[in-house]
Length: 222
Image 1 (tube, helix red, strand yellow):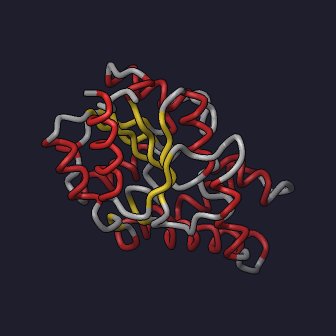
Image 2: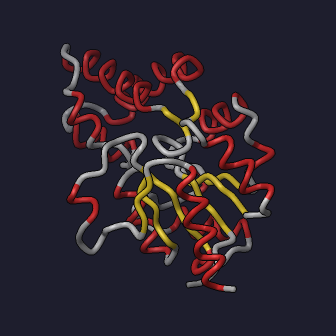
């Protein structure tokens, strides 16, 4: 096994707990357009997908740009109140920094709220790059976001690993040639997630488990 020197993080549901913010934003959008809130489970199934694609599916007869603005306007007003770091993530970033790993966020979220989250928890000091929706012409599960991050970092795919909470993240990682980690602290990992051609290389339930993976790969490569 090759040693890993680069760690990439999805933002929503991986680094940051934004689940209730996203669900609330969707429910507000559904209520505004249809008069009734959307079903929580159907909203959760959109996690990891780009907002535009999800909006087209949800409201095919409504102007997509207007639906997106309803969603984003609500979320901008609530963002600071509903976002938190998942347990162990700050300590993980600190340890990766101390061990001189290259780190980046790779997200389909827009830059302003991504930056707001980074600044709220003072994460700039632990990150070497941030790739947001505006940086890409194609989005997860296409490999472009990760490939852009690797180029920014001067990193090789075979020496990199991507953490994400959805199969969009895992497919993106596999297409880019990097190792994939499905995290289970935002949503329960299903049996379907564990099997098939898109199964992740690793599944973890705590941030500390990533360090075990990195240490094991370092030991096997020395």
